[in-house]
Amino acid sequence: MSSKTVPFSARISIEDAEFISTLEYDGAHTPSDKLRALLAETRRKHASYPDYGHNLAQMQEWLGQMKRQLLIRQQQLNQQAEPVVRVLDALPDLLATLQTMAARCPQMNVRELQQTEHNVLQKIYRLNELLLPLAITESDSNDQELQRGLFALATLINEHRMAIQGEQ
Image: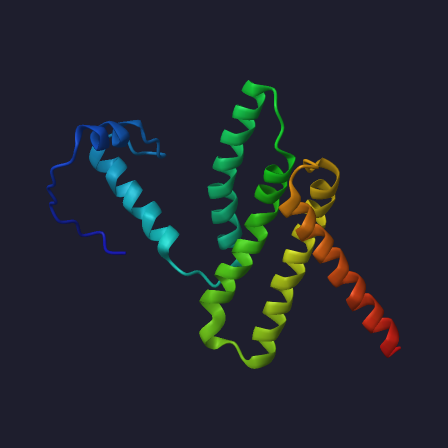
């Protein structure tokens, strides 16, 4: 990135000015500093990175903010939303894998693409392992749609298992 700067002027709403004043970035104190930091953050979020570690950190930061807000609200209401917390814990890895795959895709050969797709399916499977027990044990017995979906999934798994056993 060039260190050369150009003057920039814009009219913004009072709400946007107040929002910028509430932003906190290391070393950013003036509205101009905060606007530059906000632009740098937005640029980073829109860039495609082939590095899984960078993508994971980005997703953990983004989803961590959501999780913090949820946990604070749950504490205020003395409630728990275990399924949502489990999703927010599992999604950074899944989304980072997808981001990395998208950035690397143009250079991947068939085997690498298939392996990455397999890894994504494994992560989705692990997410289902986290959520399905909750859906079965904590679901409202009046939620007929969820119960039908769970029954259909159990039937599919059982049919697949029987087909595999028949092949052996």
